[in-house]
Length: 297
Figure 1: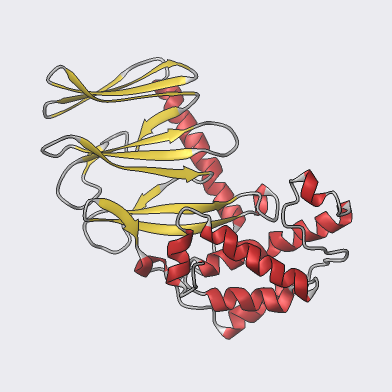
Figure 2: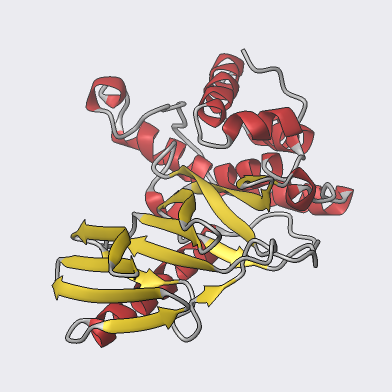
């Protein structure tokens, strides 16, 4: 597995913007015409009723076996040139339907269909703000799924928000978390020191721990300067912390917090508690906690 200690928010946002333009271009290309595919006894059609409604229909021997109509969503196939391929590695052909709501970000979903002895849906995956990707990682037949736990607007603004990278593999009829493909070696001492030094070089004057700066009822006791310093600190920290935790490097994530925290000890303990609760409440959070040998209460 390629060594990757954390992905910057800029790279994540670049991926999001790139996928937005790609999906919109695909939708524009098909908006005025129907797309028909033939696979064995199946006829697959995709059409746009209008700019706000796409439809995919699969028919076998005159009978509809699958139909998806999404209002205010763009529907496309994972690989438009050759969309019917085996992505699970079990030797049976699949069709992956990508769904995108439009807008600056959110929401991306995929539906994975299988043309086996009996046509059926094997997975529905929710990507939230980040597109879902299928990649060959472990050199074993079948593509892995790269999906992200969403921490958008948690502790800081969207552009600096954290997204926990999760890798899934197809196993025994479903997608399960691939712990071995998520783990990365810890940062070296020099790398960790460089990260901490860079974080500490910023100015966090007037810092107060603001757990939910978007909630007026919870943030109205803080000044604009308090909120600005808090969101600035987490803009520098939270992606690094989440990326380390999601690669089984929880101790180093805590060391970064311990050595850079600009507020009181009580606020730091409050944040650590909130962090664990937020991870636990994410879709793959409990599995990530188990990977890091953390107790789930």
